[in-house]
Length: 199
Image 1 (cartoon, rainbow, N blue to C red):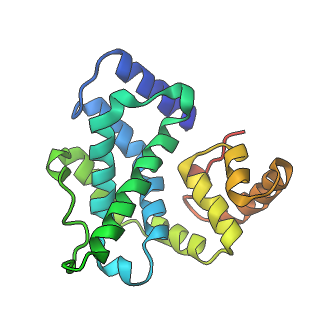
Image 2 (cartoon, rainbow, N blue to C red; image 1 turned 60 degrees about the horizontal axis):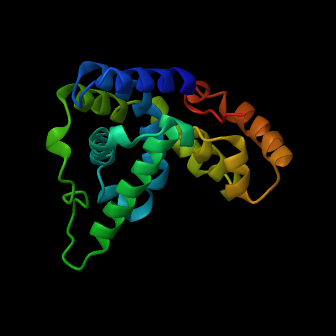
């Protein structure tokens, strides 16, 4: 999945495709499922009622499209770059919820949601109601800390070597752990398509 996405992004940037063009929205449709699971895994406890996952996903895409000209494929995969933006969006949402005047709806801070196309809103709405994605997120939340970190790395589509650094273990041990976890998660209906760690 990653290589095709990276080829698409490279082609769109080379062609000067502008934000809001259907080709960018189609790219969003290929990334919104792992992004939805990732957001859901990170929103637990009281935050689930205060931060709308749909807002986080849409804000992530809006920021990515605003800065897409800064994406540098020599520094990594587009999917990993997008999830870096998602991490910042979620951090901002958590800060907004922690502010003294924060009420319900911690993503009221999002200023760029009006720049999201109807197509992207539709993709986000569809995945928000997907029971298989909800099940995968719940399964990941029940994993031990190391496996949960590895599953999050797989959602982000980062390299196995980077996952090893996050886990604080060597590359070979990470590969073995990933093989076991992938086999365990692959029994779910969507996991095979959403989880990937590049060699």
